[in-house]
Image (cartoon, rainbow, N blue to C red; front, side, top):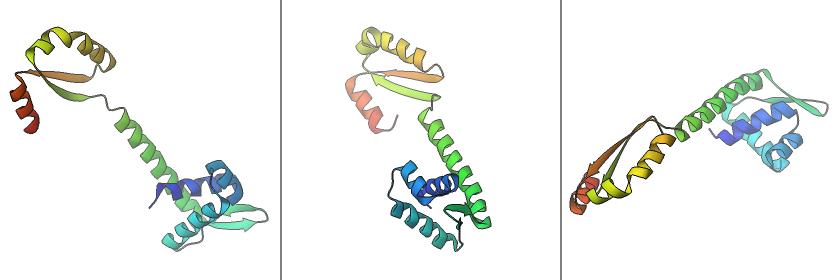
Length: 137
């Protein structure tokens, strides 16, 4: 299943026209036609009927349209939630001099921007930090 095809289905239903849907999506009309045909082949149903110059979803088209909207909404929600993930723990390995003198102002800025994030500083010498990183710590 391709999200592009589901978006195309929704646009064709909204505009009632392959040409107008293609214009709205920035596609060639033949591309929209092909996408709708592929959905019809995949589901083995007719999705749209022509009424003069307009297209209307069939009963099967309406059903798939209902699911397509839900799938696209969930996909958008998931992308939004994942891109705004602002909770969790970040472990920062650093040498003690940097932790003491250089990092505090940057840590304050980070803390202000991401109040739900937990920062764990792991100070040590260079070789212990490199080894901790290799160990996945």
